[in-house]
Length: 159
Image 1: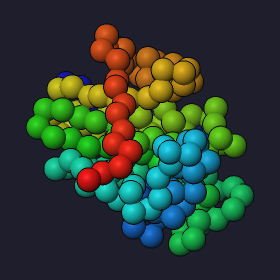
Image 2: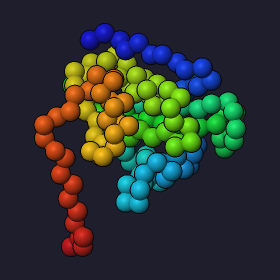
Image 3: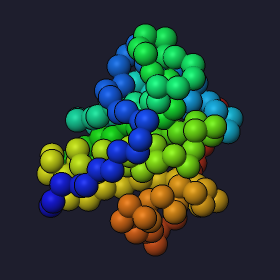
């Protein structure tokens, strides 16, 4: 596999998502997802440790509110994992007020490049069937929709 060409939109930076950034990432996650699908810092950490290898990235801009520990404003993040030949874009979120600036594509391209460099031969991501913006993003990045539908099941009262 070839490395992925990464286009860096003006005014955006990417860097490692550190433990001290988890509260910022959780704030972004809460702004992006409905109840029942939101994650806090602890569950984002669990997502990142669900695979043997993972990459955590933050995308930020230098304008506006500053992060708790760094001089940039966090606007999105991605958690990517690899297990054997399979890669997973496990979580991606860009704050609704910062969309359409190239941040999501930057995070996707960064994730794909990391996975290619680590030998992943297949990459999977899931999103809601009604999330047309995400589906379009993934299609433009080269993903193809699988014929199988995702089944979500819930155990209401664990025993």
